Length: 49
Image 1 (cartoon, one colour):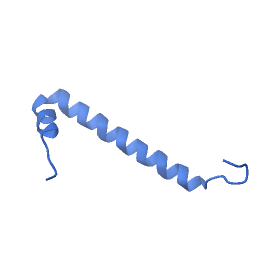
Image 2 (cartoon, rainbow, N blue to C red):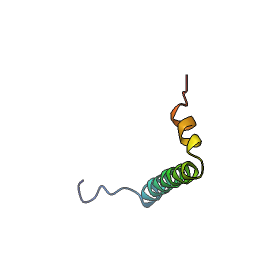
Image 3 (cartoon, rainbow, N blue to C red):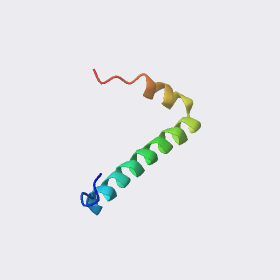
């Protein structure tokens, strides 16, 4: 990236927030899977179609 073409600060904040939400969702899925392994089996068998 050229020196003058920096991205705005809000763009970095948005991407960090999205990354944090994804990490929290993954941690929640792991925690629920530890509590009840059937949850992970149901989640892996989930289909959108």
